[in-house]
Length: 169
Image (cartoon, rainbow, N blue to C red):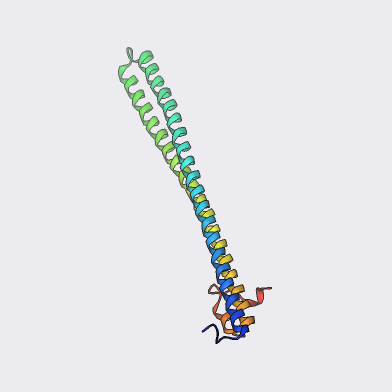
């Protein structure tokens, strides 16, 4: 079959093979970069979550110690004289503690969600860039093959994302 081809057809076939290999290599390279960036972002999100959890645990410990100390003071100062009042104040302190700790838990979760959203946004932007690069490589491949073969319909079919051939220079 190769002997039946003209030297031009063989040259076009060699160029087509080289272009296919180049486009494939470009796509593979960007896929590897995306995978590495995704792994780095996953590690960064995990680190941030661990840091947020550690900070939350530390602040929770401090607040619990503070509220426990307040209850101790209330019981020591008022417990013998006004036990009902001391118990009511301690119950109020517990209610404030629960509200504050619940609010901190919510804020920590919001911060974790923001970090995860930022990482997802960065990865989505990278995905868009990679899709654009791959589409451009395929468009240029189609343009070169159209020039070599005279098959200009390849250009119309090449970029599936609507990239216009006039924008290629």
